[in-house]
Amino acid sequence: MKERLQKLIAACGLASRREAERWIEAGRVAVDGVVSTLGDKADPLLESVTVDGKAIGRAETLITLLLNKPVGYVTTMSDPEGRPVVSALMTEVSQRVVPVGRLDLTTEGLLLMTNDGELAQRLAHPRFHVEKKYLARVHGLVDAATLRRLATGVKLEDGMTAAAQVRLVRMTRTNSWVELTLHEGRNRQVRRMFEALGYPVSRLKRIGYAFLEEGALKPGEYRRLTSQEVERLKTLGGVK
Image (cartoon, rainbow, N blue to C red; front, side, top):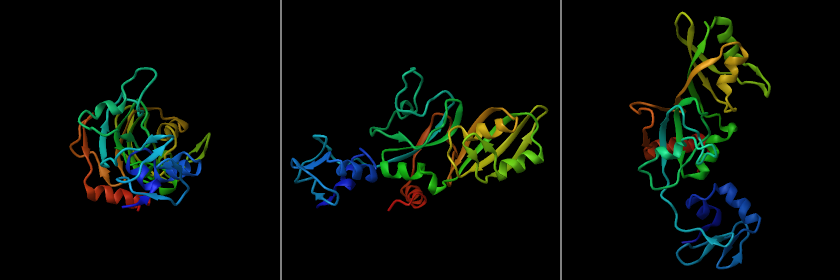
C-alpha cells in the first residue's frame, strides 16, 4: 500500500513529518533511485525509499514513555562532559527514544520519552500551551505580593512571562514550597522567575505534564503510556 513519503519517514522514527517534508523539498529523498518531490508516495514493501542514499528501513513500533527523571541526569542523548544521560535509564527499551523538551541537570520529575518524532515536535512547540506543573522549594518566605507577581507575569531578560497558576504549599522557618503551573517552556524558566523576585530555588521538581502525574513512579523509573493516554496527548499537540 502506497503512503506519502513524509509519513513513511516519520514512521521509521527518523524525523517528524514536517522535517521529512523539508528533506523531500531539499532533494534528499528518493524512491528506487529517483529523487522525489513533495506529494509523492511509495509502497515500502515493493519500493526502496532512501534518505541521502540510505534506506529508511522498516517502520518502528511507536512508543511514548513517562520517566521520573532523577537529579544529576542531563536531558540529552549524549554528553561531551560524560555526565549521566536520561537515555541510559531506558534499560529495557529496544527503540531509540528521545526526550520531549528538557529538564536541567538539577531538576527532577516528569519527562516524556518517545520515538514518535511528530508527537515530540508538536508537544514541545510553545503554541500548543501544554500545561507543566512544578513544585519548587525556595529560600525565603514568599509573601502574597510575590505570589501575585508569579501569577500575573515576571519580567525576565527575554520578556514578560505569561500568566501562571500559583499556590503556596507550605512554609518552614527559612523556606517556602510553591506549586507553579506554566504553559510556556522557556529555558530554566521557573528558576529564573523566582530568582528575579529574590527567591533562589534550592529544589525543583516537575510533578505534572498535561494530565499526567508521577503516581507510583520512583526516581529513575518509567512506564509506557497507554494508547488512550497517547491519543489524549496527540489531541493536545494537534497530531492527527
